[in-house]
Length: 282
Image (cartoon, rainbow, N blue to C red; front, side, top):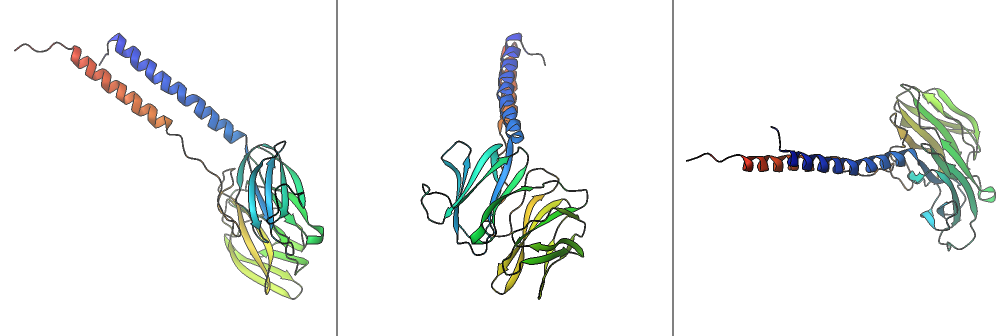
């Protein structure tokens, strides 16, 4: 059906207007994805009391994120942030934000990458260590590293399904990532007089950090999911402490709006066309 010229103009202008409204939003979403990185915060010092953790964007005195009363073994969810330089500051739990931090560290968040800032070591030599988290895995394998956060055992050897992930790893140390292929196997922690095993599943295409932690009657291992699947963005919740999942936002409804508006305009044009047809004579 061919519409009159003035109706065709209305449809073209309206659809073009809606399309132009969508383009900036789509471009903005794409630009946001390109400029986004991720950061998470962890308290892994066994004899250090609970702390409040602050995240500041460089040059901004207002905290972008504050975590209250973070205790040993607590790990925050990943926080999506704009790529750039940030400062992480630790204060005693309940201390005023105006007080001098007990510790602080700078981290340069790179777009598309993820970082963990962890309090490591004993209270007397506490430090904030910036760890770059690897988010990509070899085909059909999982990627795993170990953080040794047990003060009870100063040296531990951690293995997974017969693969040694870290040999004689010292307290406060972090191993490099290793690829593993076993889909489900026990993680074994060995030290002087200690042999602990716990079942852990490291699925192909996932990235994990295993944290060796003190508990009342020995040591345990906590399995943190850094990323799942082949996507760059971190995914999945953490296994302890503050918990959480990778940040995500709602999808834009504008494409559906465009379809609805275009359909309504075509229907309106059809009605106008029918009104212009000559009425049959009776």
